[in-house]
Length: 402
Image 1: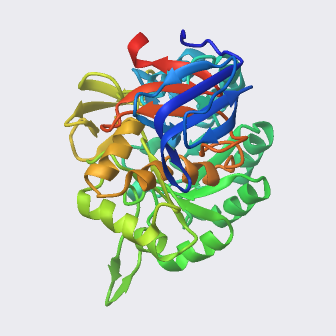
Image 2 (image 1 turned 135 degrees about the vertical axis):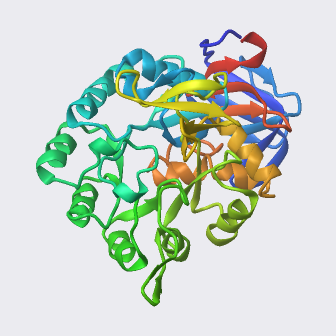
Image 3 (image 1 turned 30 degrees about the horizontal axis):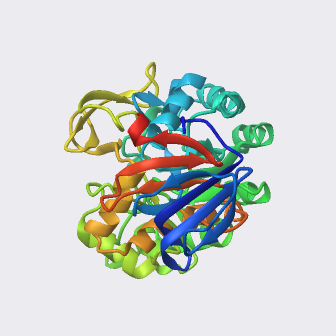
């Protein structure tokens, strides 16, 4: 079976299916018309099906990355359809079957230029991970928590800027901002009125500012612990920051960069213990250096990005004072949650399938291997090394043929 070829029926058998209710040894998945038609706990006999032997490996739902900037030497901020396609093709090899392309803080003109490319990229994307809509990360951030975001573009929310953008581009599905900024609550209310997910990010807010933001729609914490406040002291008094608020508020979802570098073992275990797999979405937050050699690189676009260095398995600012994005891949996140955080494989997979699908509102289509769902399927071994990847029933990647 060649990559891209899609028979009318595909039977994937002799594998352990990772289902919402547990593992199904010696399972079979039947795919028809881009959907999962049947899931069985034995080798089902199916007439006229193209058969794929999983060889005892795991049969998993496709991984969903709801926060990714780049990979394979490309960044969405490069402003070309080719860059979109390169990122989608790069992460596909590591099990990502759907992703939310993410921007960086920029000027309005550059942001609009990226959004204008989105529909073209969707049409041209025949061989990579699917696009689920755009995530705008910035420019409405706290300067004190900007991290690697370019400070010259950081500003407060302005309805004269964001309302025309939202009304023009239906591809915007989420927007990350600091809720304590002037105008940020009105911004969050507006996003919610347009069915766009508002997320807390690069923020110095305290609990008393986070709670009202959560109540009006800021219900996701972007890359928890990175670019956000913790406990602070003002004169004699201590205040809970965004980190503690996200952990405390039961209904708050959180993103976790589980590359094993951004967050150490203790914090991965703490987040899992408090939030559980139903509230954690594993993200790569990968920049262009994913699946590339270490060395000098650029965060953001080639023409206006920031020079960074990739070393020790992560991107850093050139002066090494802060991380500048991850170079992780989705399978690495799953493996780290199992090996470092001690999470079960079922829960680790849930955090990159079921949970992000719900957060993005596509859980009626993606994230599970059950009848009627999109046939986004990954076959991997005990080390979470990817063997085959199917997107909407199409064999998009096969290790033996690449």
